Image: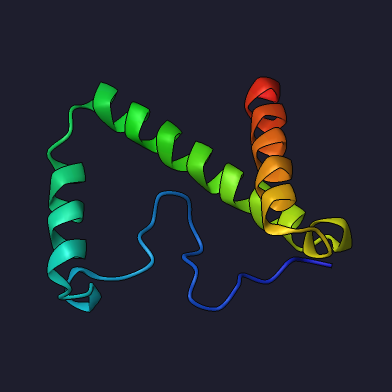
Length: 93
């Protein structure tokens, strides 16, 4: 059975999800979008890597902070556990 595309997602590779006129008018978002567009190809690769790394950490942090062990701990213990989790995650990369 063929997999159907998700709503709102482009069908082909490299296609943008939104047209230029559909992009947000938020000043912070516009500034960041323009800043990234001005980056050299090497800087863009580094920016994408940092962004992917951050997204990966947020995923792991959210997954860990929803465990019963974390939720039932004191604030100091939670901070210690989170620091240990971050160090373990950082070493594995």
